[in-house]
Image (cartoon, rainbow, N blue to C red):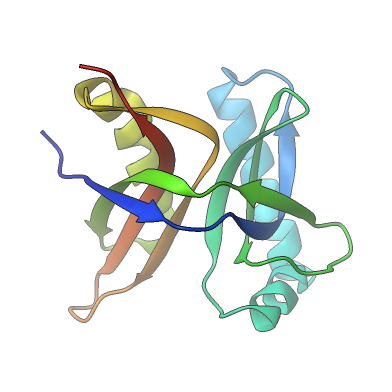
Length: 159
């Protein structure tokens, strides 16, 4: 079983991000292409760098449900006024935290996400993921690799 922890966030918080809406959440290839195109766009036009400069410099990959549709974006912790960005509400409570380590920074967030939604959530029986969103971040590790974590709001199950 993959390692995970339960951590509690005491207060509601916000994240600001640029992203894309998915018409069909199960179109994995199409959604990955849309996400990659958005990441390239906000990197090239400097909008992501501007947002990172407003916050603490840590980038997050965010999955959320907006207007009943899947949404994925890239952003920062906190509420900021940035043209074209959305401010998302995250709720206080318990979070399933899943760690990961890898040599490829650009792929680690997706690898952790795939591990979580590819079976790990079904293995966790004492908590269930309740959303409305989740986020992953990646940072450099001391050994030259990268460490990441995915945070998913959850509720303890009865039993």
